[in-house]
Length: 300
Ligand SMILES: NC(=O)c1ccc[n+]([C@@H]2O[C@H](COP(=O)([O-])OP(=O)(O)OC[C@H]3O[C@@H](n4cnc5c(N)ncnc54)[C@H](OP(=O)(O)O)[C@@H]3O)[C@@H](O)[C@H]2O)c1
Image (cartoon, rainbow, N blue to C red; front, side):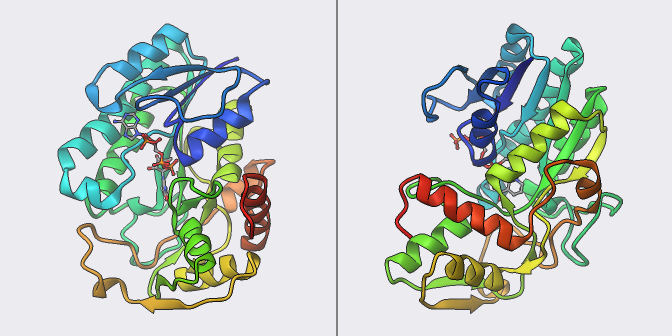
């Protein structure tokens, strides 16, 4: 099958491409040059915010299935530049959906637990979104673009994505490992509850949803456990055998441009029933993260 992955240099997109290789004909799409290891895939440079390059690339490839993992994910950057956030997160998803409609292709568009306001999470698929801030609002509109414009579409919501090895894109989990390894303390929000998503495991669930199901609508596909961020940081440190200080910090004490959901996280019962690749417990996800970290050259 011809499968296209947007955001292919990103956390989920890169894992998705790696998972697809040897099984499908793959077009990896990203901003600027390819940063993936070499392999049997084609690369196309696209700007999700330009209103046309993604749609043209998907039509040219004659995609049969599209995993749309590309997005402007810098939550505070989106708050500072809502116009860019709109063009990338709404316009990019609109392009993917229009191409999928023209090609009769299946689409899975990634989204986020930030579509909820964080007053009463974790949230299941029936909970009513109430996004706050430019990132959250543009991601929510992107969901509607996918579901409205592409007849065969699902929206896969994830939360707090992490993964990769040393030197990979910084995430909260990799910062915990790298800072504690250097003997530096780590700050963690003590009033934020989340679910987390190991990128490789999340990518597998998204691809199963894309290629092995005909599920339409929204599906929550983060890992399974609801944790506080301090608890998550401690669990990462314990799994990597790292001692060191984790400093609890209240969200309101840090002047962040964009609002953050406090009681966030996703209920993944439906994905657990639907998918072979079930959402992992925190311990399972951290075992796998540790193994991936070592395989990618990490010492812990
Ligand atoms: N990261 C999280 O914690 C998180 C949480 C909830 C939901 N999500 C959602 O999950 C999906 C996957 O995100 P991720 O975690 O893999 O984040 P990521 O690593 O930031 O990946 C996003 C990718 O999109 C690319 N991109 C950004 N702007 C672009 C543009 N204008 N044109 C083309 N490509 C562009 C980025 O390129 P560069 O690599 O060049 O920056 C990056 O590779 C997104 O829909 C995101 O909203 C993520």
